[in-house]
Amino acid sequence: MKIDILTLFPEMFESPFNYSMVKRAIDGGQVEIQPINFRQYGVGKHQMVDDTPYGGGAGMLLKPEPIFEAIDEIDKQTSASKKRIILMDPAGKPFNQAMAEDFSKEEHLVFICGHYEGYDERIRTLVTDEVSLGDYVLTGGELAAMVMIDATVRLLPGVVGNEASVVEDSHSTGLLEHPHYTRPAVYKGMEVPAVLTSGHHGNIKEWRHKESLRRTLQRRPDLIDEMELTTKEQEWLDE
Ligand code: SAM
Image (cartoon, rainbow, N blue to C red; front, side):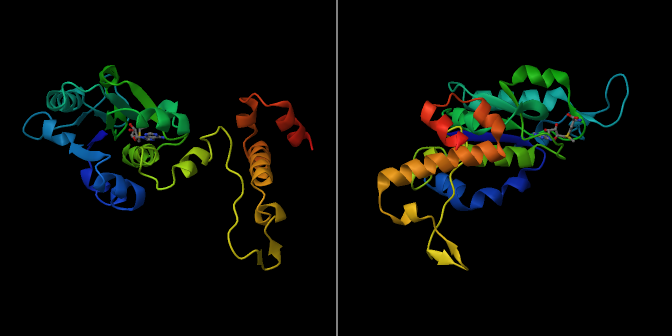
C-alpha cells in the first residue's frame, strides 16, 4: 500500500510512524508513507496556500490551486493506480473500524490535511471520502490522518503478529472486546474468573462472547441496537 499525505507540516509525521506496528509495516515493505508539503505548489513567489473568504468572515481558507496541483503530480507518478482521496474534515463521516477495514483493502490512499478555517469548496470535487475523527475541532488534519493511518495499517496482512487479535479487537466484530486477565491468578484479593483457568475452551469461548455482549450493552448500547441478536444472546443479556 502507498499512502501520500498532503500537509503543510510534514515534520509532524517523522516520529509517530517510527514505532511499533506502523514501523514494522514500513520496514517490511507492506506500506510506503510519504508526507508531501503542498506549499511547494503554493501560488506566486510567496507560495501562498491560503486566502480570505469571498463574502467576508473569519479566518483563512486553503486555496484550490496547491491541492489540485499536488494531486495532479501524484496522478502523474502513479497514473495506473486507483486511489482513495480522503479529506480530513470535522464535517465528514465519522471514522470507524469498518472504514479502516475498507481503506486497508486499497492500494493507494491520499490524505488531505486541512488547516486554518477550512477548504475552498472546490477542493471537495477531488476527493472520494470526507472523514472526521470525531465531533470536535482540531487545529489541523494531521493528527486525524495519523490516527486513521495507524488504524488502517495495522490491518494490512502480516503487520500484527497474531492475526486473530485483530479479528477479535473491539469494533471488528461489531462488539466491544471481552475483559482480559494475565498472571497472577489472584492480585490484591482480586481473582481471575475461574472459567479462564479451567482449560475448557468451549466454556472460555462462550464466557468471552457473553462478556463482550454485556460490556457492549453497558457501554455502547447503540452498537447492540444495530445488531441482530440470536435467541441465546438475547437470553444472556436478559440474565
Ligand atoms: N472551520 C472548520 C469547521 O468548522 O468545520 C474547522 C477547521 S479546523 C480548525 C482546520 C482543519 O483541521 C480542518 O480543515 C480539518 O482538516 C482538520 N480537522 C479539524 N477537526 C477535525 C476532525 N474532527 N476530524 C478530521 N479533521 C479535522
